Length: 256
Image (cartoon, rainbow, N blue to C red; front, side, top):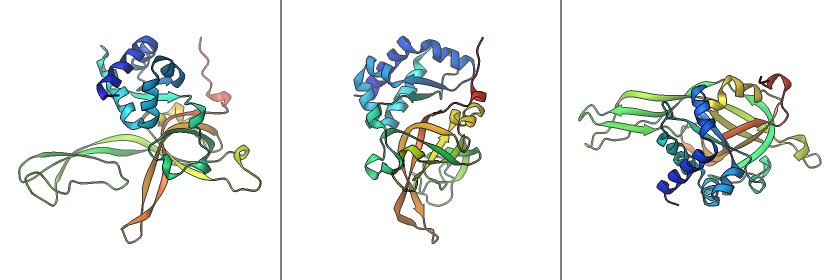
């Protein structure tokens, strides 16, 4: 499917199924919209295929479609997808390089949890020679500066601004029920950002809690002590949606 078709189809899907939820979340200051995979599948199976095979591009198109709604402050609202199909469930120990870039879900026990810290997602630089503005997306762990300008200049560029989001890392360990015999549980690094590190979500991810995560498998470069990059890569899950498998009663919100 073309990007414009994905945008228009998803806009139609939200208008039919989630328009009230979108307006309510914006009004309450929530910068996300949770959708059910099954409902999307009933509406248009092609959208689901695009989402599972090319999750990053498709989710970006989904989020762009929300800008077409006549509502203030709808920019940067994230689409969260829950209840992915069973065939996209992968045990932590079975995640491999062939799964990089795929949309999957898994379960495990939170073993470690970092503090919430701001992370740079993009930065804008100015060329001192010609005044050209150079935007640079920050996708790696190391802060990236432009290598050269269109005018031919190389060297230092002036940092004008940077965009920050709240981010947090978890270490997820296989649940005891998934272990065979005396096997040691495998672990996976998990990355959360934006609304997934809000105070409400934070309670779900306390160490010892069992959680269900849907997200995209990413490769992470390993930097050697010499400063060079190793030929080996780590794997991690960039989380799209997270929920507690066993809900703590203290986390349940009781409505009127």
